[in-house]
Image 1 (tube, rainbow, N blue to C red):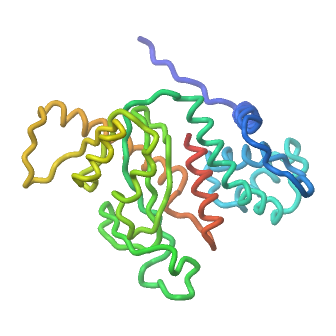
Image 2: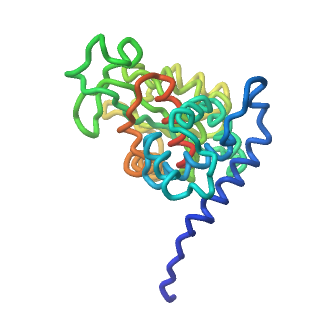
Image 3: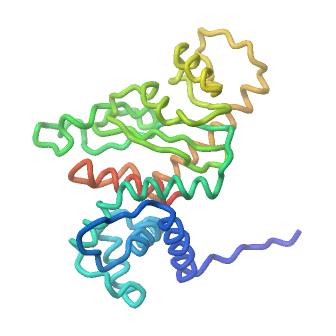
Length: 278
């Protein structure tokens, strides 16, 4: 066959398509505001700017604001001041969580195969951690096996389907055991859940089995595996997909380099990166 390259979508079309998806999805959600004046930019416009900005590598509120004010002011003439813009971004954190669920339901409503894993989200070098740190008493010390070093901050926990779509995501202090976080993330799912050996816990597997979710993990070297080897190899091959997703969140969306002064802004920035990836 001749080589065929797919032309990139023009930025104008991308902005329009994302705006339509966001605007239509927001109409299905409960009323966002019950009192007070409405902001100059609509919520659909602000969220569209966030998603497009993240997609093009603008990870901070200031970078997103400057990008659209310089290049797309004709499309968003009511962008206003940066303080109001960033405050509106942060205030919509819960809306973006609901929007993510709505988009996932639209893209992939039926799933029976899920992948689970965690990703470090450092906020501070552990050597610089002290009581004056913004996340003192909130974050925790963790260990990143990929980089073989300790860090202070949080750990993201994601559930994807077999196509690499993030269906659920949360984050917790880095010192919290992921086996204690995972049950809440998968509470509404049934089928098969593939994870790494860090999720090995007999009572966890039994509890998930009661909700018709079969937890499958590789076993430790001192454990006997009676499962067919081809099945185990296939399972591990599928599990690498979530590592690819984390690679995208790290390389394209800079989820491990978030600058935030409080939990409120950290939450909204993580949420919009996951939404932009979706």
